[in-house]
Image 1 (cartoon, rainbow, N blue to C red):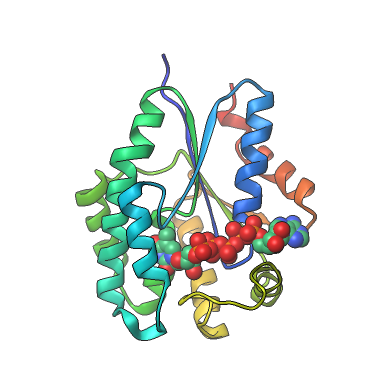
Image 2 (cartoon, helix red, strand yellow; image 1 turned 180 degrees about the vertical axis):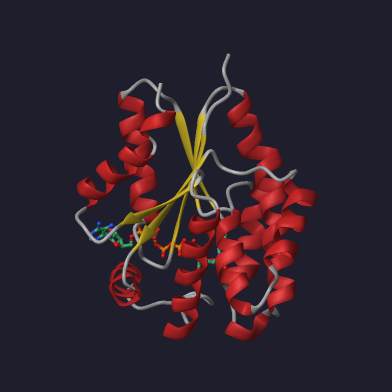
Length: 208
Ligand code: T5A
């Protein structure tokens, strides 16, 4: 049995990650590839508990340092209980956000990239996706999509201002520049089917 492939979807709020994760799983299934769709923060029972702590409450509930540790702890549980077992059984894993979200979001709050990667090495044995697809969309357009979906309710991160979200977008682009083999930028300002086609093109070399 060959090991499955690990894909992560990244990007700002409302970029369409969850929509595309489900679409990608359908397209892969049609090609005979079994994939699980999972998400962060969350994806395992323990990590879903941490998700509630991270996303609920006031913007200032956690310092950037505490938040970074909580994301790393949730990820360690998710990787151990869900992601690695699926990959080892030969399934593909499509993860809605992974460690690059910590690098972009907590990095935008001056948390050092090397510290985030060191925590990831400790907690999750440094597991990285085979391919990371960063969905890029103008922050206002993404925010409008998310606001329509959530009827205006915002989590702790959605409540932050445009400067924060611009810094997050710049963080994702920096990661893509540094790791061009793994990380691809995808223009997500199009209808869902067109975006799925762009994603498939960006993973074509991984498909059997
Ligand atoms: N976070 C997370 C960190 O700070 N550090 C970390 O390490 C991690 C893992 C998670 C928050 O936590 C932060 C980042 C986030 O702020 P979340 O609730 O999981 O929050 O939400 P997000 O991951 O941010 O997901 P979003 O809510 O922003 O949405 P998606 O998944 O990008 O978008 P999606 O697919 O739900 O689509 C949004 C709406 O747009 C429509 C959909 O139908 C939906 O209504 N839509 C489109 N409309 C038009 N054209 C298209 N192509 C469309 N695609 C989707």
